[in-house]
Length: 292
Image (cartoon, rainbow, N blue to C red):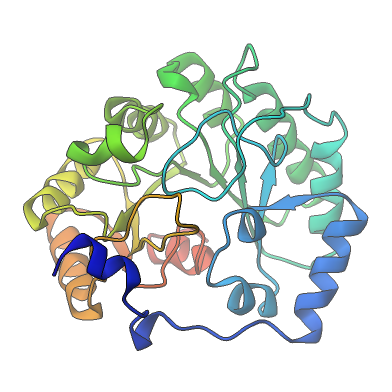
């Protein structure tokens, strides 16, 4: 089947989800609006927003709602950057204290415009959450900081329970899909995290962008070598016609195969399926590798 045929093909049944309608969903939406906080659930048009918010789980996105990069898979806006809100770390911590959660995922846009790439803001956010919500486990899904190992170490030393950074795609597609990123920057980020005592290391891959089976397996080998313990794998879905095309809809059986291969290669846990995203069931993923 040609690329253009996939572009216009209807979504397979296994990729269809229901629109969120529950009271819990709208309570969370109201709380976020009141505190002027961003979530990647909304900004990245996540298909699991209803499932996760109904369960009272969400992923905060710090450092604004606009990115310095223009990755061809991502629906987060680019440009019109503002200075980070100095009160944001405390606002995030306060909001989490109102949600009665045991596990929180924090991510951010890339802020290559800032001298430290936003690392200091990351540290303040993690510290604020620990201060106000000492019982909450934290997963930090961080940028690559353009390969600056000292900045990556700075965030790691704030001691989130899980340090995540997504490889996103195989090496051959990096420049096409993530033109301002580097495959080696991502692997170095994970390797640096792996050297931090007590931190679980996690990454994510999108499938359906034209990658080959042996390239996916090689990416998993590279992740194991970098010290990655958890891998999430999901189907890439095109946010708008201006984004990268979906070349293939990956069948659930192939995701199951990749899960088996990844864990045989040394990954402690692989969460794989068409609708899986990095933060989907993140608490369960962390517990699967021993988080108390």
